[in-house]
Amino acid sequence: MLSQQTIDIVKSTAPILDEHGETLTKHFYKRMFTHNPEVAPFFNPANQAGGTQQRALAAAICAYAANIDNLEVLGGAVELIAHKHASLMIKPEHYPIVGENLLASIREVLGEGATDDVINAWGEAYGFLADIMIAREKQLYKENAEKSGGWDGFRAFKIDRKEKESSIITSFYLKPQDGGALPEYMPGQYITVRMPTKDGSTTMRNYSLSDMPGQDYFRISVKKETGAKADTPNGYVSNLLHDEKNEGDIIEIAPPCGEFFLNINDRHERPLILLAAGIGITPILSILKSTLNARQDREIIFVHGCLNEEVQPFKAAIDELTEKHANLTTHYRYSDPENDDAKRHGNCSTGLVDAKLIESFVPNRHADYYFCGPKPFMVGIYQDLLKWGIPASQVHFEFFGPQEELTKAA
Image (cartoon, rainbow, N blue to C red; front, side, top):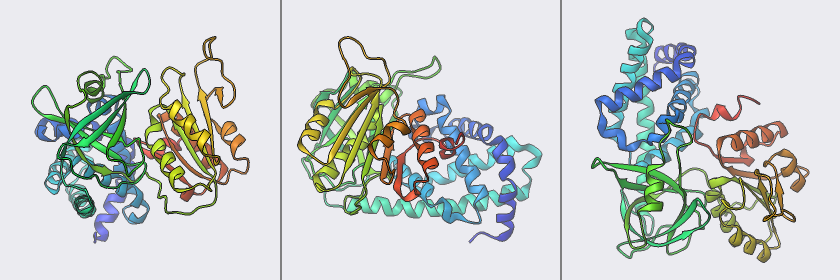
C-alpha cells in the first residue's frame, strides 16, 4: 500500500499536473524516444503527430494524481490500458523505462516544483501502479495462451482473402499459417497487426474484428488512412495493407484483446442500440451479427452514419440481415447532400446521427447503447446520453483519447 505521505504529496501535485500535463507528456515522449528508441515500435506515429497520445497520457496522469486515495474509480481505465498493453506485448521490463523517463520529465518540466519529496512520492506511486498493471497483464497473457486455439506473442497468419468493401475500406480474411484452430473472442474486441518498417524495425496497429466469433478466420476491415493535415502522415500500416499486401501473404497477429465488447450471455430485455460512424462500424458489426445469431427475441436498432454511399461499407450484408431478422431495424445516415444518382428514402436520410434520430427509434430512451466512431460523433452521442440520464451500466463505447473530452462541453 502507498504511504499516507506519498498520497498527500501526489494529490497536492494534481493541480500543477492539470496545468502542465500536456507539456509534460510531450517532453516525456520526446525524451523517451531519444533515450530509449527501442520502445518506439509500440507507438503509432500518427497519434504522436496529432497529439492524441500525449493528451491521453496527460489525462491518465492527472486522473491518477487526483484519485490516488480512491483508485477503485480508475478500475475501468486500468482494464482498458491493460488490454491495450497486452495487445502490444508490453512486458514487465518496459515499465522501468517508462518510469525513469517520466520521473526525469517531471523534474525537467516542473523545475523547482519537482522537489526530492515530489519525485520520491511519484516514484513510489508509479511503482505501485506498475505492479497493478503487470499483474493484470500477466493474467491476460495467460488467458490468451490457455484458450483453445490461443497463443502467446505473435503468430503468423496468411491473408486468405482480400475483399473491397467501399472506395476506402478493404476487408482482410486471415487464417493461421500453421493451419491450427482459432480462439473464441468477444464481439467488439480487436487484434494487433505487426508489420516491418523500412528501417528494419516493426510497428503495430490495433484493428477491430469485424465478423462474429466462431469462424475459421479472423476478419479485419481497414480504412486506408490519409493524413488530414500537412503534419499528419498517411497511415503506414493501412496503406501497406491496401497497396502492397496480397492474398497469400503472411502477416503477424497478436491474440484478441479489448474491454469494449458485448457479452451475448447477458439476457437483457431492453432494446440494444448500436450506433456507428465511419470505420467505427467494425466492432459494432461484430456485435450486431453475434447478437442476431444468439437472440431472435431482442429488439435491435442499428444506425450507421457516414459521408456518402461511395465510402459506406457492408450495406448489402446489413440489408440482407435486416430482411432476414424481424427484430432488427436499420437506418443509414449520410452527412453529404444527396445527389441525382442516389436519392435517399426508406431507411436512409441526410444529416448527422443525433439525439432526435435516436429518439425516433426508442422514444422512452431506455436501452443499452454501444457506439464507436470519430471523435465528434462520440462526443455528441455521449453528451446526449448523459443529458438523458442513461445509467453508466447501459453506455458502452470505444474512444481513443482522454475520456474527459467526451464530457467537457456537456
